[in-house]
Each structure stands twice: as C-alpha cells, then as structure tokens.
Length: 444
Image (cartoon, rainbow, N blue to C red; front, side, top):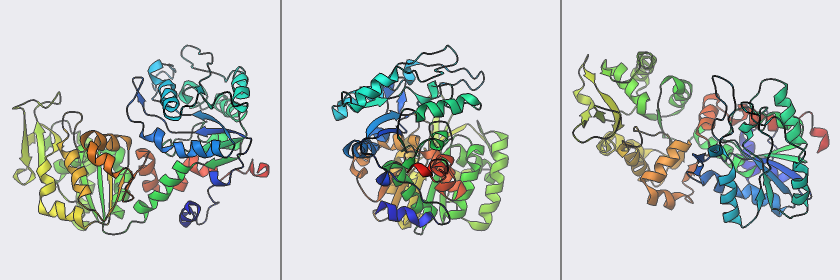
C-alpha cells in the first residue's frame, strides 16, 4: 500500500527504490538512520530511534545483518575545520538504548582518532566484527558518529574514499534518515557504490508530506523561528500554499515591528526590512491570523516576577519602543478569530516553538492544546524542537496522540521545510540519489 501511495508524486521521475523490494536474505546491510538525539551524552528523546525500529526489524526478519550509522551533533568546527571526537557526541547512548529495548548485543568498533582530523579510515579490524555479525554472535554493528570521520563532510578525495570504505562493508545500502537532508558521504555518495533503497521511516515521512504539499482545505500553517532570514523561502512557500497562516517567535516579532512601525528590542533591522515585504503581501492576500497578545519581558535571562507583562497588539502606537517579546500570551488562542481558524481547518501544519525556551512556554502549550481541539483535521508537526516542546509541555496529550492517525510527527523539520520550499521531497539530494543509481543498476 505504501508503494502505491508514494507513486502519486513520483510522476516524471524514476521511482523511489524501496526496502520492500531489496534482496536482503544473507546480505550485510548498511543502514543510515537519523538518530541524532544525543545531547551532552544523554538521549533527550528516543522518538526518532523508536520510529526507525520497523526498518531494523524488517532487515533482520528477512535475513539481513545490519551495520548501522548516524551523525550526532556538530563535531566539526566551522571556523577551523577541525574535528573533535567528544564522548558527549558518541553513539554509545544509542547503542545502550537499543540493547535495553531489543535485548540484543550491538558492537561499536574502535578506530584510530587523529587529533583535529577525526577518524581518517575505517580500520580493517572491523572485519572481525563483520564475521561475528554474519555468524550471529552479535545482533548488529553500530559505526561511530559519521561526523567523526574526516571524509563525511569533506569536499576533496577524503569524501569519496570514505564512501568507498563504507560500501566495502556491505552488500546493500538502506537510507532511513529523511531528517538528514544534507548530501554527505553517508547519505549521498554511498549510493554510487551500492544498490540503495529507502527505509520505512523515510517512506512514511515522504508519504505524509503530500498532506502539506497537496493539503485538504482550509489549510492552516503555523511557523516560527529564531531568525527571520533563515525561514524566508519556506515561509513564502507556505504562505503561497496556505489559506491562513499563524506566525510566532522572531518571525512574528519582525512582522509586528514592520506592520505597526514599532521598535522591539532584539529584533535586527534587517529582519524588520525583510518582514516589510510580507506585510505588503498580506495587505493584498489577508492570510495572516494575528495573535492579539504578546508577552513583553525586560530581560532574556529568565521569567522574572514583575519584569514581564502581557501587551495587546491593538495598543501598539507608531514609533513606540518595547523590550523583548518572548512569548505569545495563552489568551491569544481563545480569541474568536484565532480559535475559529483552528477549528475550521482540515489540515494544520505546525513548525513552531512560540516562545523563548525554556522560560517562556505558555504560547507553545496553548498552541498544542488549541490544535488538538480540532478533532477532524490532519495535524502534522515538523521539527525536533517543535516535537520536544509538545512532549515537555503537554506530556499527557503527547502520549495520547502518538498512535492517532490524525496526527503525524515528521522526524526532520529542516528536511520538511526544504521539501516545502522546493514543492517536492524528490529534489532533496539524498532522496534523489536513491532514484539515480545508474552505476549500480546492473547489480540488482
């Protein structure tokens, strides 16, 4: 059934190669997950790991032997280019979680680390582990953080070298990391050397994107961000597609500053300038549903008693100056126009943390509770931060809707926004690579 649903947006392209059609029996299978859930050496939320278990189970059940990999954090210093293999960005917590969950032993091979350059090679010592894997003495191999390897994000021969070394470990490659949208060696280059397929989680994320790309209307989109200019392209793509749109965070602050000609502390002039175009566009299209109450704070250091207050948007006066707007007041979502927009929608897409976390959270909590009041709409959440806020602020609601078919939680917010911006998930390089395997087609 999933194969058939995916075909509705495959028009004009080679079909996406699916794990269902991969010959796994007796094969060593290299599978790329998006298990980037470790911060400070601790798993903050195992949701992405749990969602990938279906693919892992399918590989083993059909006779494959899994070698797994993921990236974690940003070990590479953007300024110096040095790679620092810190234990707080190790895959070990993921492996321990999987072992507890599945009662299976996984092995993490150890490779030589060159200070500042990370791991240059996959040592031949891994062959002993692969032998144990094939003999079923271990349940799986989990490679070290892919970003610890010099070739993962390299732009030179080290990248191709790493991809070839990865390919030498296995017979088949499965990409189940839709959230890892950047074309790196372990998500993109590897497909040149192995028969490659999409895992079940990647398929589900792609399949559910059609609810956003071709939504049932009315379609309400909720978008927030910490900086306006980083969200301009996906914001305009959503604006064009949505019937109504709700803004939050710095995006909303920049919009308010531009529309009402006010000064808001912490909002850069370039963000206000960029927002003016949106204000002009909305004067014609009238799609933005304004949230009528914002929370002003004198400081960003915390929610200090006596130093924050609710400010009605209707009281703004041209030229006035305000301190930081760090949240949306909960009562905004009880206002008739706002509430009616949420209740009338047939599709709701949320990629938004409304307030400045962890201190200002009432807007995000009210957003999630208001969204849930619409029991008929398809509700789609994108982004790790969005999902984490939902889980933290509304734990009971979160648990109750995890298996609710009216809800879908994407595992990669950046990937979803990129797909929305492009109008299709098939332009994302790692996905496209699964459909353009000219070099290996003869092997399958």
